Length: 204
Ligand code: HEM
View (cartoon, protein in one colour):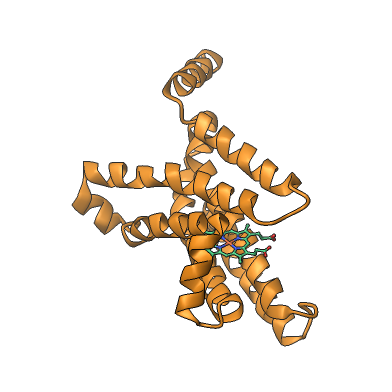
């Protein structure tokens, strides 16, 4: 019980990554994904990927604004699950939309900006996922932090991918873009210093 009290946030992070894929597989097997299950699975994995990437991106500001270090401890898991769902999303796209026809996929990437920015976002996430272990963090030293600033480009590109899809209702993509914008703003050094000062004043 004591273990759970200390590690509940890790359990929650792994549940956030693993439960949705179990539900997706369950729905797929039970024929509950509607008339075009492949499309439903592609949309669901895209949405899950973005949600988990945003959750991972929120960890640093949550930790620095609240002082709760647990947020930093679950950042990597959330990011890796987000990356895995993006990989699955692209795989389903390649099989279902692209019919594994490389020529068609490359043409689609060059003709639809939403697809090319999505691919750029995914490409930027690859080195982050590969170097996410503490071994790589140690090996790269200061360069690890520099490399991981790629997330500041990958997140806006993911928002742009969502905004650029051919949709009539843009409420969700706009909300996502605003959240990502605020999370970027939260990293602005003057704002972080002001919040740190406020926290110190309150602690006295
Ligand atoms: C980090 C990378 C990516 C993220 C976070 C992401 C996220 C998303 C999200 C949130 C949606 C909308 C889901 C919904 O409406 O419920 C979506 C749709 C879609 N994504 Fe991605 N995506 C990424 C990369 C890609 C890539 C590389 C491709 C293909 C080259 C792609 C192809 C699509 C397609 C075809 C749709 C559906 C478009 C439609 O409505 O017809 N995505 N994606």
